[in-house]
Image (cartoon, rainbow, N blue to C red; front, side, top):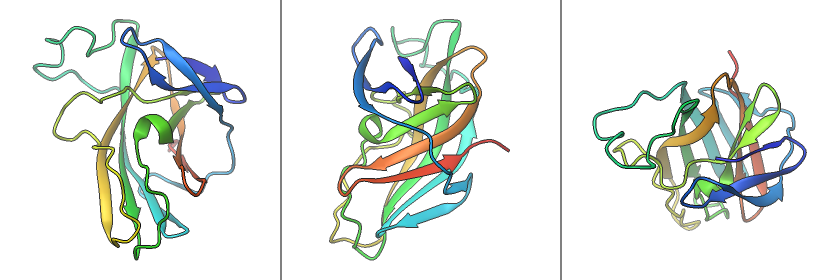
Amino acid sequence: MGQAQADSAVADNSSADGVAQTAAPVQLMQSDGGIGDRVEREGCSFTVRAVVNPVVAQPGDLATPGKWPAPPHFYVGVDVVVASLQGTCKATVTIPSASARLFGGDGSVYAPKIGGLKRNEDYGGLTLDPGQPGQDNMGMIYFEVPAGFTPAVMQWNFLSPPIVIQINLEP
């Protein structure tokens, strides 16, 4: 997956060969919370439940070509919950490739792997219905990163209205 410095363009999708495509610029801001904190804004909620660094291959992960990164890269998994509270969240798109960014301690930034790993715990990327309160989309989002990468911050961008929530991943 591609990387960019925190003040430049970042990938929001990738081609079959893992090459990132450029998207809108992102930048670090003040964190809204940490791991386990439920951050609410404008009827929308976002929580990072856990960070798995590195994700360990399970049987079947290595059987599909291109599913698992080749050394020196690996996956970092971020377990998230995205919710609509009281039916007032106007942000209907919760697709990780458009919404999630993982920043490293060195300022690098990564978009998630498209399609996840097809495990039961993967994030579904479903659409929230703003008229239905209490909807939760939850699961693991995967980021392909280079060896030595240390996850520092996760940003989630609700697309409409634009709401950016930033979670500190450092202990």
